[in-house]
Length: 100
Image (cartoon, rainbow, N blue to C red; front, side):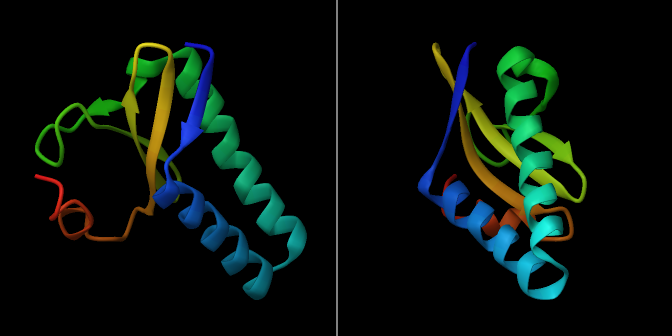
């Protein structure tokens, strides 16, 4: 794998994460959090199977922990699709309720 892309959901969630830390902590912390997640996206392109398969939520989806977030992603032939970026305290069954 050489690249990844973010779904529309993931783009909005990444923006929301940045906004939250910018408004509640600082711009540098917001940048640091997004960079931390981006590092994990890159890691998944190198080791796509490092995340756990989660067929109970959606066919072919995998999860990878990037504390305090969980990255939900798909492995496609040429790319990794970052599907969702969800805080670990969120109820995942509600997030994927409309998928299965």
